[in-house]
Amino acid sequence: MKNQIVLQGIQYDEKSSYITGPALAPPLIRKAYRSDSANYFAENGMELRPETFNDLGDFEIKDYFDIEKITAQNLNKELPLITLGGDHSITFPILKALNALHGPVQILHVDAHGDLYHDFEGDPYSHACPFARIMENKLATRLVQLGIRTLSTHQREQAKKFNVEIIEMKEYALSKLPQFNKPIYLSLDIDALDPAFAPGVSHYEPGGFSTRQVLDIIQHIKAPIIGADIVEYNPTRDINGMTAMVSAKFLKEITAKILENNTVQNG
Ligand code: MN
Ligand code: MN
Image 1 (tube, rainbow, N blue to C red):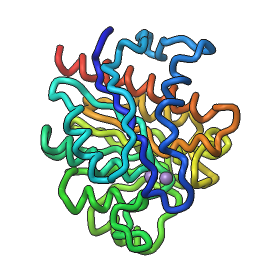
Image 2 (image 1 turned 90 degrees about the vertical axis):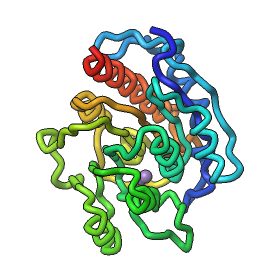
Image 3 (image 1 turned 60 degrees about the vertical axis):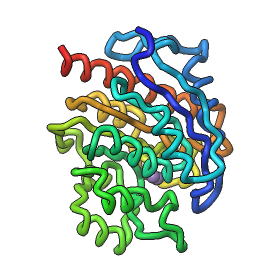
Image 4 (image 1 turned 30 degrees about the vertical axis):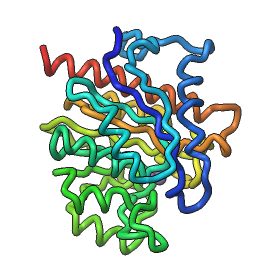
């Protein structure tokens, strides 16, 4: 399979509220993807060699507002887009670019955090805010969040205001996973995982998903997927590149799922 999916790396972490580091992630996720320690077969049997991607490389971002412009240039109406972040602030400008091409989407958001703050320490574009901006700008008709385990009173109010469907971590079960009737965008914040599985993140929030649980979520998606991001991997906090490998595994399995679902849809 060749050039089935557009891949872009967004090297940007200026909207991180605690520590930086995710800007370093995209080349390390690619390196892990190509590592000789694993092969290119996804669990569904598809072989996803690097040529599967129309890989546009990594973009070093200086100005937050360039993310939308660069994504718009990289987008292709025929092909799904996967973005390697970057902190989670990048999802709002990506969705803006995607919206211009496809209209509003439905979103499956996997994260320890709701990222629904109206502003965080005065910044409305902080990585704690992207889903408030996305909902205010009507870039999504539905937002489902999984793995959440840090909701403040303000974020609960925001969730109510925007009709966000939250399955909190404490009540999560695979059987509760909603299905979507429209193409979706998948936004995967690596800190949704328990830090035991993914220590390379800025915000350690114990009590999260295992790697297997997130793979199960990906593999249970039945709707076509028009875009996805993998964000918040922070190499400065990683141990032996293990979180890079987890991120690369998610890249492979998300790609497999996209190709599986979108093929069914087309054929
Ligand atoms: Mn997040
Ligand atoms: Mn998070």
